[in-house]
Length: 425
Image 1: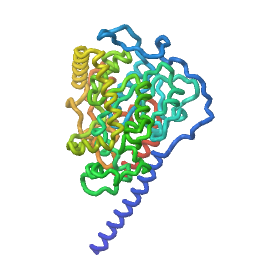
Image 2: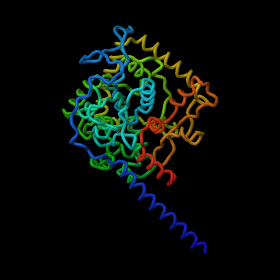
Image 3: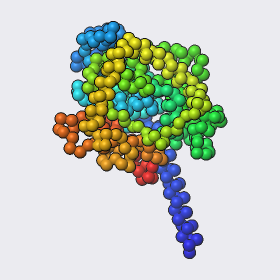
Image 4: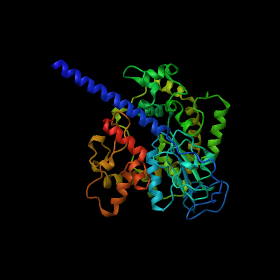
């Protein structure tokens, strides 16, 4: 009898695993392959030079808010394209842009039915919610695989293009952790240290044509719409970097996040209060794999194009900091830190992020990677004064919930979330 019961239990477990595998595979395919019918017949109606409420005079190159370290009169930029790269603190930037857009009643170019522009497919304007040729949009900021020609058909000519990069070795570790289970080529890696095993012999596991393989090699370059499987010394790599340099007014760095925001403020002529932030989508320290010098070197070698891209923009970043003024930068960073600390005291229960299991309000739960709950979140302080209540909630709310509040229909993303909940993922 006991053997019979155990047999039934095992059959039940096996059925559950099979059903879970089928459901998961179906949802991953639906999410990754679903794409609206590309409307090649869309007419090319010119977008206005500016969609800003306060357009600046027509000029070929945007000017900075600083000259020789001094503040200059300027008009806040409202037409903005933020290329949201993966695993680069970009959700925190998104929150800043959402709040700025709401404050100034700007129009967002959002995706339809999910939280990205049908990534990893190259961006096409037909993916924009409520798009029609010639319609004005101010801000575009959701994940996409960049396609400059198509973006230019949605946003006005005076748009400021900005993005953010991260040290490629650290980005690889984060991407491997977050997306690894979505990349079938990693499933055959044995042992507990899958990332280390992969980096020691990447060619053994990597398939350039493999499903979702782009997550594991030169992900930044891929996000820019480029071929992530080129060799770093291929002339097309340098050509692409020069094109990116010409198109993007500001390329920020995760490792110097606050300095990046000060440069953002300067480039867009914003106020300090527009930069206030809490770090969103941060991982628990216990889930972060510390890269040994050997593994870091291998990660940089494997992601050699991203490393070349990062070094180039690291140079341009510090040129901008020098032009801004080192003392002025240090002063402004200290002021931003002071204001953020003040907001944390006002808004956050306990003053810091907590594990997902300790978040009291379901609406404050961040999206988690498959198989674990490693992304931390916040509890909104009780009895926040009326003057700060709305701002506190907006600063703390996770990306998907904020998108829903802004009117984006996330039915595909939510359906995938429901399946994960059913499977206890």
